[in-house]
Image: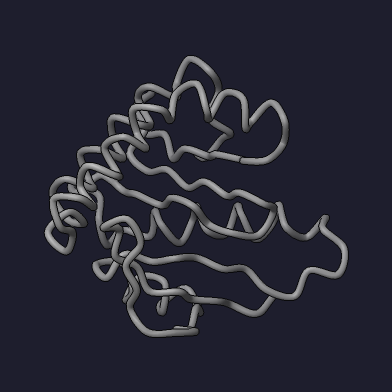
Length: 153
């Protein structure tokens, strides 16, 4: 079941994000990048609460047996800021299901023609499978390595 993440589940979502990042994404990052992401997650709890309340960010969780096994988050309406799925559940359509919820949510936004993401090198294939295309070469900012991508709606 997919539902919006509520206050009481944010810590669990952030823990999942950290676990998946550490195992799959951090291998492409320098020590600076790992530290940048670690600091980002440390500040995430309060920031996420404020951003969700203001509407700046939306976050959904894929729940199985009461536990979050996947997370997707958007910011600024049409930018995917996070998408992580527990390693035991990769290649089972969870990322696709989460993305479909985002697409459904975006139907209410007038004159929206695209959605963007700054994908980790690890996740480029996942986003391509979801219909995204690279819009530039791999970049690095504060040690965070990413590939800018876009999908037309």
